[in-house]
Image (cartoon, rainbow, N blue to C red; front, side, top):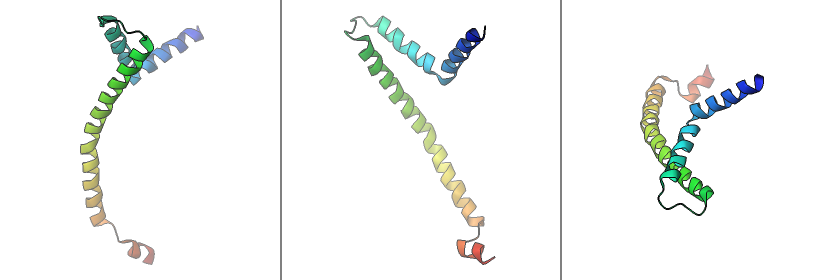
Length: 90
């Protein structure tokens, strides 16, 4: 019974990470491909790489505003902090 639970947790891990969804999309693309590739492994590598590049671009797009906000918050915080020399003088 413990072996069965371990398999469920692995599946849940794949689902939470998005890996299962990504792999499913690539396998569906392979199935729907009218001209079957000579190497399914190469097809998977190519399409997974493309999906990962797309995901990376989305993450970078989400990250940019956060980085800008972080810079603004750090600048605002720096206004209220003591200069380094005054910190050590105390």
